[in-house]
Length: 346
Image (tube, rainbow, N blue to C red; front, side, top):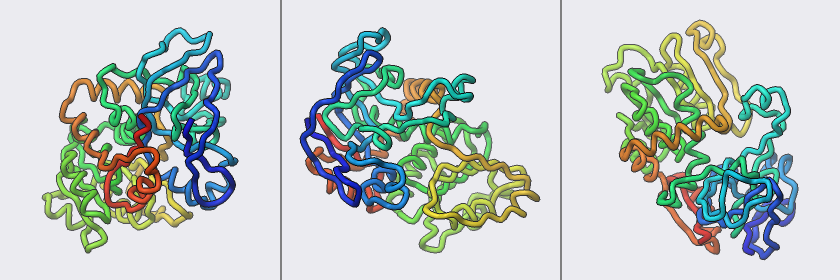
């Protein structure tokens, strides 16, 4: 089968032919139809310090995917051949304290598909059946491939009740845009999104933001508050950029008692004005992945009941490439101007 792999430790990837993965007794084998690219894949392709410390080559990349089940293990009774599924890419141990307490997203032994084991940039991928989320038969494959990053967006946006709250989102990448749509669906009052790309800010506004602010061209959250008639700071902050500058401006514009969920991963350590965090009684919470599987239920329920939300989430797919054109797909993702790029493996 075809597979996009890190064949050796170092920059670059190769589309190569490898044997199909074997399906174990508790696994399902999935024929991949779509697979999305994300920032993690860019890190792995470039082979930065984090990638070099995390990945053992050779390995197939890819953790955002949707496909059709072609084989099930002997011990699997809740997933069937022919089911169309999205994959939860975090494999947990089931025996650590958090797993036993039902907090599987906090598992200290988490293994990442496409990061710590072979992933879904391939014709076939094998995962534990418990990680396969069965989707409606008529679900668009592009939307099915978004459930991993959509889970990040939902998990971040719904950390606290947003009904009637003023929300700021820093970073209008695909997850930031989807978080904007979720916050609007959940009842936020005003939503302001910041980014460096007018194209991405346009996506955010179409998804439900009241105002997009290009901070690279002199825009600021302070000016946005004045334009929207806000008398106090933001109640909820969703940090999706990994930018120290964005975090600093967000904290400077939070209301007393504001709450911030941080999903964006920074490249390096950076300073935070802890005096402001303390005196303004701001809550900071780090977010990684999705709740397994409460977030998945929330995603499915919201999408099933809101055509507007489905349309907003689907709109983040702005590029689609055949698997053989993976280099163009990576270049488009790296440009930082569009939305989600998917590889078509069908």
